[in-house]
Length: 307
View 1 (cartoon, rainbow, N blue to C red):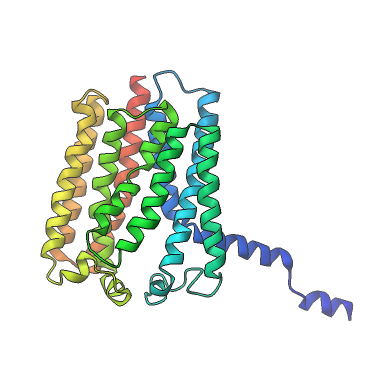
View 2 (view 1 turned 60 degrees about the horizontal axis):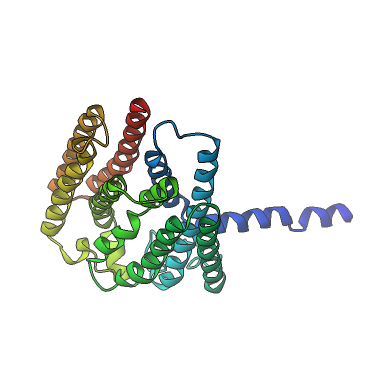
C-alpha cells in the first residue's frame, strides 16, 4: 500500500524544476543571451590596454548579473502587457501567461522586482552611470516601445534604441564614462536590429496581422517598404561598422573583416527582399543572428591583438 502511494504521489522536485524553467522562459533567454554578449563586448572594449585582471573580471560579472536581471524583468513585463495578443498568435500562444502556466500578476511582480533588483545591483557593485543607462533601457523598452507596438510601424525604430544600449551599458561599466567607442557600438547594434526585425516581421506577417500589430510587413502587402527598409539600413550598418577602423579605434584587419562581413549580410538581405518568402526571411534572420556575434568577436580579437 505504501509503495502504491509513493508511486502515485507528485514529486515536488519535478514541480519546482518545472516552475523554475517557466520563469527562465519568461525571461526570454535566447534574446537575453545576445544582450549579455553585447554588454560583455562593450565592457571589454572600454578597458585600457592591459587592464584585464581579476578586478575587471569581477566587475564584468556583476555587470552581467545586473543586466540579466533587468533584461529578464523587461521581457517579463513585455509579456504581461501583451498577454492577450500573444494568445492570438501561433508563435507566442505557448508562452507562460497565454498558455496558463503562469498568472499575469505573478509575472508582473517578477518583472518589477527583477528590474528593480538589477538596477540597484548595478548601482551598488558597478557604478551609477551604468545603472542609470540600465534603468533607462528598462523603462523605454517596457513603457514606450511595448505600447507603441500596437500603434505604429515606427515602433521598431523606437525599440531599437533600448535594444542598442547593452554595449553602451557594458562600456559604462568598464570605463565609468561614455566615449565615441560606445556611441559607435550603439550605432552598429541599432542599425543591425532594423533588417533583423524586418525579416522576422515578414516571416511571421500572418501572425502579426492576427495579433493586430501594424508591422511594416502587415501594412505593406507588396513589400516595397520592406525592400527599402532592409537595403538602406543594411548599408547604414556597413558604414557604421567600419567607422571604428576609419577613426583609429580599431585596426585595419577589423575594418577589412567588417567590410566583407557587411557585404555578405547585404547579399543575404537582397536575396530576402528579392524573393520575399517566408523561407528567404528565415534565412536572413539566421544570417543576422550569425552576423552580429561574428562582428563583435572580430572587435574583441582586434583589440586583444593590438593590446
